[in-house]
Image 1 (cartoon, rainbow, N blue to C red):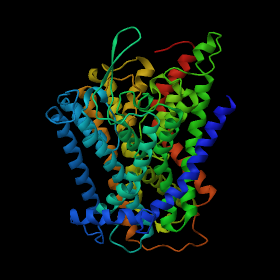
Image 2: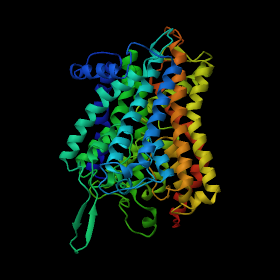
Image 3: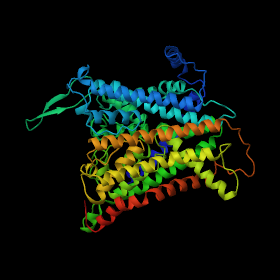
Image 4: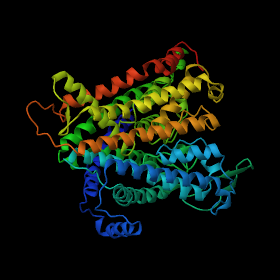
Length: 568
C-alpha cells in the first residue's frame, strides 16, 4: 500500500471528526431554540411557514401525538410520490416523453424514497421524468432525512427533560431541520458540484456522434441538486443508474471527497449534538468514539482485502496487486473502499463502484454494517437512535453484572425501555432473515439471481439487509425489478423504518416523564473507555450471534471456495 493510500485512510476519518464537532454544536443550538448566524435570514421564513400551516411553535406534543404526526406526514408523502409516477406522462418537464411507471415499481420507489432508503429497482435516466425527479424524489430526499433527524432530537429530549409529558413539536423540528440544516448545506454542495462538472439542466438528452460515426444518447438533467441532498440526507438515490460511479454525477476526486464527507457529516455530528443538549459533551464523545471504532475496524478489514487482491490470481502465480474489478479508474481502490464502507455504515446507499465485484470478505463487511441496524453513524437521526438502543442494552447487561438498576444519562432504565430497545435492534434482523428465507425458497426469488451458489445467497442477503436497514445499495447481480422483489423489499423498507422510529419515540416519552437520577459512586460511568469498549462489544456480539450462520453459508463459504479456485 502506497503512502498516498495510507494518507487517504487516515486523513478522511480525521477531517470528518474535525468537521462533525462544530456541526453537532450548531445543530444543538438550532433545536434548542438558540440564535445562530443564519437566524436573521431564516427566522422570518420560519415564522411565515408556521403561520401558513397554522402551527403553534410553542405547543408541544406527547410521544404518541409526535409519532402520529410523523407517520401521517410520511404516508401522505409516499402516496403523493406514488401517484406522481403514475401520471408523469401527462405532466410537464418530461422531454423524453416517459410514460407511467409500472405500478409495483412505482409503489416500491415511493416507499423507498419515503423511508430514506432510496433502493432503486429502476434506471433513473430511463424511467423518471425531470418533474418526478425534482418534485417527487428530491422532495422526499429532504423530508425523509428531516423526519429521521427530528425523531433523534425527540429522543434526546427524552433524556434531558424531567417529569415532562411532551418531547417537542414535530412540525417545528421538521421545519428547522430543512431550513437551518439541509437547505444551506445542499445549496453549498450543489454549487461546488456544478463547478466541477456535475450536470444541472432541464434540457433534453444530448445526441452525440462517436469517433466511429455511431450515435450515442447522453442523458442529462437536474442532477447536482439531487446528488447534494442524496448525500447530505443519507438518501443515496442517484439520478443515473450508475449512481456516483457515473461521470456526470461524480466526475472528479474532489466531488468524490465532497460526496463522501456529505454523506457522513450530519450522522457523525449527531452524537455531539446529543452531548451539547445534555450539557455533557463527554457523553457525546463516547457515543461518537464507539461509532468511529466500529467504522475504522470495518474499513481496515475491507481495505486489507481489496488491496491484497484476488486469491484466484495468487493461486495462479500472478501478482494481482489489488482488486480493480468494478471500480472507476479515476477513484482507484482506496477511495472506492472508503466510499463503500461509508455508504453502508450510513443509510445512504450511494455507490461509486459496483459492490457485486467486491471480494467475498469485503462483501461480508458491508453486509454486517447493514445487518446490525445501520448504527455505525447510520442514517441521519436513525443511526443515533439505533446506537442509543444498543447503549440501553449495554447498560442493562452492566446492571446485571453489578447488581444495580441500569441507568443511562441520568435516567433509570426499566422494563419498557428494555423491550422497546430490543424491538429496535431485533425487528430489522428478523425481517431480513425471514424475507431472505422466503426468497431462496421460492422460484420467484431465485429466478432473479445473476449468480449461483454462495454468491447468489449473498446477493439475496444483501438485498434484504439493505432494504430492512433502509440503506438502498445493492450487490447489482440481482434483478430486483420484479413484482416479488418490489413487494417484499417494500415490506422490508417500511417495517424497518417504523420499527426503529416509533419504539424510539416511545422510549423518549417514557424517559421524559422520569426524574433525573443524581450521579453517585455506584453509577456506572457512561463516558468512560470501559463503556465504549462494552458498547462496541455488544454491537459486534449481537450481530455475530444473529447473522453468523447465514454469513457462513454466503460470503465466508465463497471466500473458502475461491481460495481453492472455484467461483460462481
